[in-house]
Image 1 (cartoon, rainbow, N blue to C red):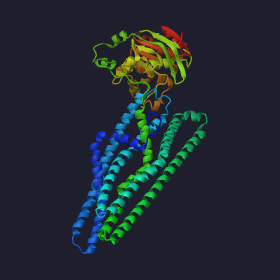
Image 2 (cartoon, helix red, strand yellow):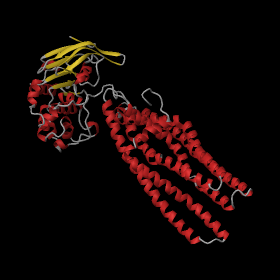
Image 3 (cartoon, one colour):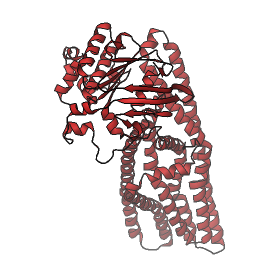
Image 4 (cartoon, rainbow, N blue to C red):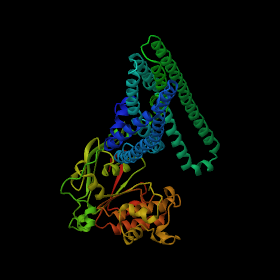
Length: 574
């Protein structure tokens, strides 16, 4: 769908997808030329065979030359078809890689405001199967359309040179098979194609959710119900697929019937013209053979409408992601600015410690913010002084986590303003803002990689000494070195081999490694016991001497290390 929520037309989707071919246009033109000449070689194999029969019946010489031409055309047909398919598939897979990069870049810009709460399985379906289906469009749709048009025009001229009526009849049937039937089939199946792709994405989401919740499903005996629902969804998807298959069968039947009518129509027309002595018998033979053997390109075009419904539905879903505008626009880097990554690389001639000392804190001034119609913060103000540990305490749902997300500029405020380092947050280049802040969320996401690489997310390219130092501050170094592979231990998918507390401490280690002047901690000890909570809080107190720390928690014990504590209730602070 487009930005207005309306379905695009098939032609508009195709036009936008074709627009992505511009960097590879020269290869596409080569594929069209090769394909057109290849189809003409195949068509003229039968035409030359007919001419050979006619010459044999007429007693005319020239048979060896015709036989040599037949062999040459057969060899050329194979070579040209291979070259055309090679070009088309090169374009297709090259573009699929480009589109995947574009979609990932678009999702990164949409995250998190536009993606929070979105169906993750459906997004995975778009990134994988929907983009993969576009291979059909790029490899088997664009050039076949051009090939069908060029080949048909050539054959209309060839048949028409025997008689204009024969050429017009051929043109009419080419249009019916290559244009009318695909449009008819596409129109009746467009809605079903989109419904099938959406249902497929929803089934992916259901399966993904079921796999992630497998332990809970087993624990509470929910397996039979979950299995029954999966079977119901699969059966419904199967019905939709069978309906699409029935449409494909009816389209093929109508196409074959039209070709049969066209062949007999050309035969009867040319016989009529022969009876009137408007053409010779060779015209009857050649025109009929040419008509029967020249439907290959338009039949390929007609068959496209079977898969084109799903392909265009996939294309629309991909284009919708690419065109979706983020709720929060990123601020590009300004000239002359530097980031903490530049500091680390030596491009900026100041130390990280001085950067921390010069940091002037952050504050929210009369901020009002709502998720759609639900107001979370109303006329909220708070001053986060530099070099202090500021505790924000309150019950769940009071707006604590929302405040941290606004400081990260995951969302923009509705009213008021947020300042970081005495600058309005909307004016700070996004990359610089990310370098100025470290954020530890309530749920730490771990990648299917080693513990060392998961910690190194906080600072790409960090040395093992830096990683171990951060792990020690997060009180997880001893646990890691006790593992058989130490820091090279794989954490498994979503970190399933680790406990909630161990995941949380890896998240805290990332924040220590990032070494930003503003540290935002959202319930950093919620999954820890009292002993480990005390160790982490002590480490935060000792390691953050030059940092501004915002410590959010519903636990009273967590607030013991804070220099100042704000109580939050219903979006207001005291």
